[in-house]
Every structure is written in structure tokens, then in C-alpha cells.
Image (cartoon, rainbow, N blue to C red; front, side, top):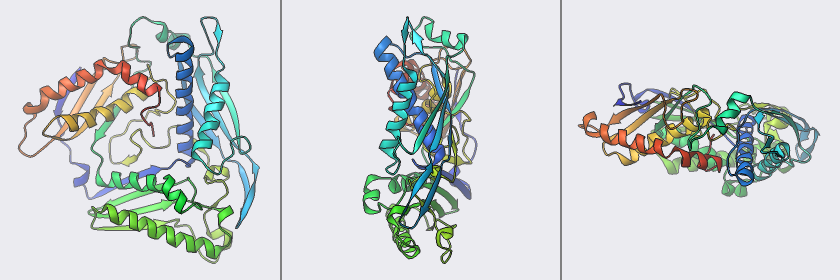
Length: 400
């Protein structure tokens, strides 16, 4: 069923208070989401290459247990590596052929660490623990049933929205800047474990940023605070170029306290707090649009690592945001949209039990003027869900 209606609530930009969070690549929760998704993509491609189809798997359970390090100004050493548990279900054999699931998963995990965390040597600093098993007969059978479109493996709801508010855009942009290649070239002493929390109060934006400095590049407490001030100034410069707020206040590593030596600074040996300070878990990172938006409707499903062909916890979460964006871009008179999707287990994923679009309209526009175009767009996008699922299997849409 498709239902298009006018959104009756207030816009997030009209509310006095807005809170938005973003976790960067080196945050332990974000590591879990990103690695599990990398494994799902690698398995999907291996299944396609060997059998011409994507087989049942859900690599959406993961726990990154923090290791132990000894660190100080000028460097340190890893005493105990981080341990990443990779869990849930996968297909280990098909049509009489065995599939090296653990080898594929191990390579994908270690490759992700090499590509995204400069300070981590995945051979020395990371231990992998596998708790993968074959899936249940009923869920596995979904992949053997005839039809171009798979049945949903769960009864699940998802929501997406567009456009991002100025606060959401600012938080997202700042974290991406801090973890960009260009920024790391200018400030190589910064780690990847970035967290940005944004608070908008009326037209003023308050940003709190946590980002460690690398012990091997900071020789003293004085050097730490000198570099910290340069980095803070660069953040202010970046935000000033964006504009859009009456005032921007920026707080950086607020637990720091001069005169306390190692106890008063945020140093990291490897660039992530998972080295010794914080563990991570799948589903606690960013939503599929890259943010944790307090005050927006958000789904509870962890999209990362779920199979891209039948698991609506992934498909519908990403599709809902895509549909909201397409509506705003392609239907004149629509200034904002929320899209809610609900599956029923076993039904084809291109036929949700409910697809609800809630629209915000430009002044003077009426729902009757746009409802047919929005319904047609939803029908068209759902009819192409097979190719959309294959794009998910190639990793073309980020999940956090």
C-alpha cells in the first residue's frame, strides 16, 4: 500500500533546540559497522562470482573489545591487541561447493583497517574471532524460492528523510573534514577517532569535538596544547567559511587540563580509543545517512552487515532516505519529505505492507497538486528494487 499525505508536525529547523551527533571512522562503534558491511560486500561478491547469485548471510553482529597500550609523549607500545568478534550467519556451502567464508571475512576486515586507520597494523594490533554459523532452514530457503525479487526476511519498519537541516549538514561536514586526506596531511598528528556533537539553540551552533592526538607525534604537554590550538583555529576557519548560523562556538577535547601531564591530554597510540579506552558494537554508530539525529524519527535496525537482497533492515533503511531525496529533487513544490516503509516477512521486498510519504510543501502548494507524481515515483522506485539491492551488494551506498 502507498499512502501520500501532508506532514503535520513542525519542521526540525523551526524548533528552538536541535541535537545531532556524528561518529568518525576511528570510533569503535563506527569501526564495527564499517567492517561488518565490508565483509557483507565481500561475501556478496564472492557468492555472485562463484554461483551467479547472492546467498543467505547476515554479518550484523559484532563486538570490538578494546586492547591495552602503554603510551606517553613521543610514543608507546601495544601490550594487547584489539579483538573483533565477527558473528551471526553465512552460507558455507552451496551446490556441493565449499565457500571459504572465514578467509573472505578475515581479508575484508584487515583490508578495511589498512585503508581507514593509518596507525593500525591489522596483523599485529588486531585479533579476529569468528562466531559464524549456517542460517536457519526457513530463512535460507528464501534464497532458493523462485522469483526475481526475494521475500522479506523480517517484519520491520524504517524511516528516511530529506533534506538535512543546516545543523546536520554542519556536523557531517566537520567530521568529514577532520578525517579527510587533506586535513591529515596538514595535521598528521590527529587520529581518526573523531566524534562531533552539535547543539543548535535558536540560531547559535555549539559544537563539541573529540579527536585524539597521536602520541608518536607529540613530544610534550606543551607541544600537545600548542597543536591543539592550531587545530581548533582550523576548525573555526572551516566553520566560518560555511556560515549559516548567528554564532558558532567550538569545544575541542574538553576533558583536557593543563598541568596534569598524561592525565590531562587526549593521546592515542593508534588513532582509535579501541586501543585501550573504549569498545564498540554494531548498531551503535551513525544511521544510514551518516548521522545520529536526536529529534528526528530514526529506525532501530542496524543496517551494517545485513544481506542486501532480503533483509529489509538494510534495504528499507537506505531506500527510505533515497526515496525522500528523490521526491524532493524531482517533484516541484515539495520542500521536505519523510518516508516510512514497513515490510511483512515473506512478502516480496518490492511490495511493502506500507509505503508512507509525508510531505512538506512550499507556501501556496496543495497536496492534490503533487500526490500523483509522488505515488508514481514510489511505484517506479519500488519496481526497480532488484537493481537497487545489487548496488547495495556492491557497497555503493554507505550504511553509516
